[in-house]
Image (cartoon, rainbow, N blue to C red; front, side):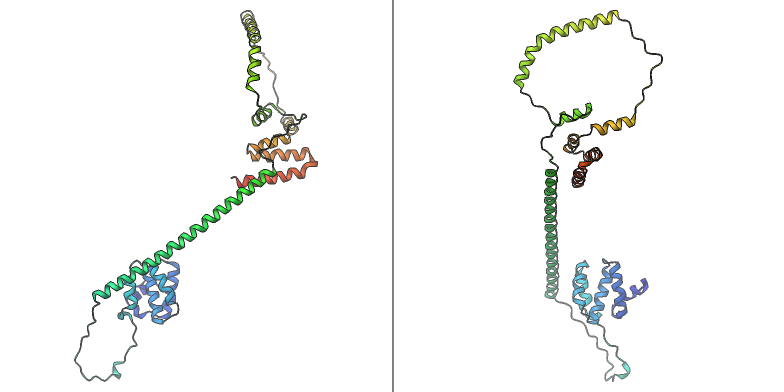
Length: 302
């Protein structure tokens, strides 16, 4: 159905056929908020006494801003299709033309129609609010259930990875200065303040006298010693990257891997356990499981 055909049907709704009803149905599927198309489609179903009329009436009423117009379109006698009468078959007894006036609706009828329309609109609004409330309740319940499951899963993984437990140190572990700094930050050593204060108080006289002597030596050296000339042929320093990678591999320990994990540096923890797999093949299965757990923890915490 093109634009001109649609305009004609809109001006002459009594000429809508079953074929037009099919075309109007396609237009509604493509443009669901097209009120005129919905009204014509509903009119065609009403004229055909289709079983789809009642269900479509509810939809059209929901999409229509002025339901009085829709009511007039469906109920008004102007739109009822009559079977054409062959005037040749009718015997005319009196040629006097009698104009039949339609009775105008009374005030009570108009009020009743307005009240019915308002009640229908309120009922539809209440149903919509109830449906929205049910959907929101389900969404909140599912969200809470999902968050609860994620929390339980995180706690299970953290317990399996022993996160939060004291870190075990071994005497044969080797670390760089920066790594030892991380370890000391991760596990601060608690000392009793009273003992530290007593030791500091005992050492103060010794420190003062020793410090004074060192300062005198430094002043004497600055006054008497000439400036040190820079070397004309400074030696070039080469960094052996492969050697540093080997050192990193040798210095990597389970304790350092757990430090990364405690600090939530998941990617570094994964790399640490990958190095440990190469370093300790006999523990490869254990380290591989920890890598999988860390990746799961990383995914749920992003």
